Image (cartoon, rainbow, N blue to C red; front, side):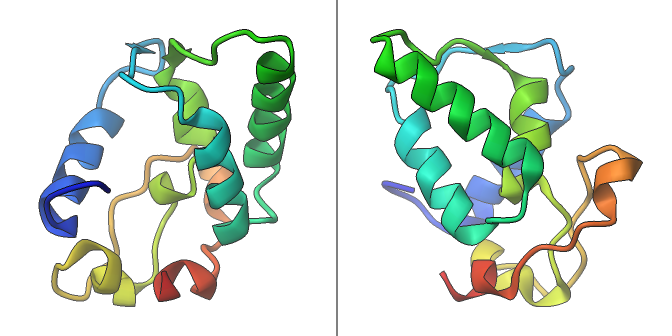
Length: 119
């Protein structure tokens, strides 16, 4: 987050999560590789994230862009779309509550690492 506060940022993320999985995302900067490294530090056991990070590394090694990408890829791999514990208010600035889930039921069994809260 370069500017603003976590609360409005989280509201924007929630609006993006509601878009169809086939939505193509065109971001303004090529941060996918560094974002994947950060996400792995928060959620190292996320298999979908590990695969996405490997795919991104391969694309960048070939000098290819990682964008656009399908939003569904990000929903599966991005730990900030996963269920968060009630004390997630430290990230979002909101009152303690469980945030909505964006992952399919098979992926919901995985819980978010407490390390994510200490960021």
